Length: 168
Length: 295
Ligand code: FES
Ligand code: FES
Image 1 (cartoon, rainbow over the protein chains, first blue to last red):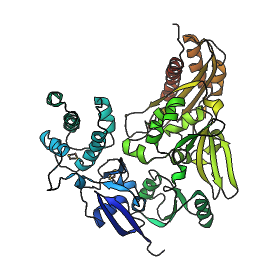
Image 2: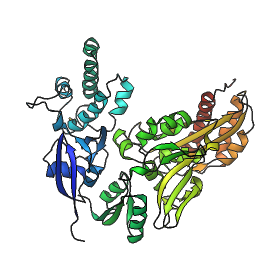
Image 3: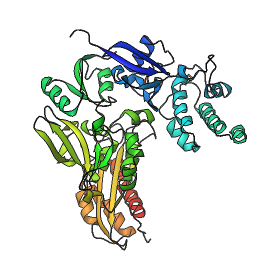
């Protein structure tokens, strides 16, 4: 069969965009190849590791097992979209640095986008709840504890609990 | 890039049926968390796909006129877990599907896809069996509804005829009213794992909470398809709420189920787990229903 393309319009990191997309492309392919958003990593490409995780209409999805054509009309947020107006990094990214929650960094964008979903809920989750909400990611370097701390601290800080955050 | 021969996107249920009739070789893709992975593995490589993911009319939970609960087949696991109707009436279903894969998988995975795979380990399967769910199928000859028990034919094969798609799963009022249930998944890990055994139990107690008027139990992975344990159910029905009767019920389960040996677990181990889970799940169901077990 000859190549099949489809026009896909969506919002990526707050910008309305539109491109012809190969129907065989995953959303990871589209974000990386067509929009150069390389924070979206290709780890396993079968939905096991979370390296390709992005937020679509407020919920986390592994973009490697999401067809690019399904992005039509959707609002997509990748790690690049967290940057401030002058390219400043966000509090959760800074927390990953401060807690040494990053080593090779391959898993980090995916983890951080799951953390963003947690932070956007604007409520305090228990340790078990945080672990469960972050459980769709694999990290081969850090051993997870530092990642957990970075997320918990940021959650507490955003809720104005500076003192509790220091004790994590 | 996926090795997809052609992709047809359905714009309505009617359109999906038409596309399936026009492309009899095509495979339906809902959330894709199984189909795309199999494609990547080469199993379904080079196939035509009919995508139904865009059909919002097949999403959400609602009541039908007769009080039955209707779950659109494309409703994601996480939406089922959060749904107020499910929380109030079949909490155990929301809890069971909250154990599928990890968070991202629960956002893309659909209840319809989970059942259409015909996989016995699917976390939704045992609970839907235990609640006498009904499957709604829409095809060229209109809509038909069949008990979920008949929908599963054998391992990996369901009663989905040419041109048909599953449009909803229905829990009749008589199946949920007055029942409380509990699901236990036994797996090696808490996240991203497949159940070694899944056991879903529910109970309806008499108004004084002393008698088990009805008990239903279903297993995933105890056989090639999810299955009920009818002899165990019979053994418990009409019995008083007591530790001895709960135990007797759990032990009778072995008359009904036939687990297999596999690299995940031996037959003997699965049998042991099946009994332990049946007892625990019934105890918890009784507690949820307001009963007290005297030791
Ligand atoms: S690359 Fe998508 S989950 Fe691993
Ligand atoms: S920092 Fe290397 S995989 Fe997580």
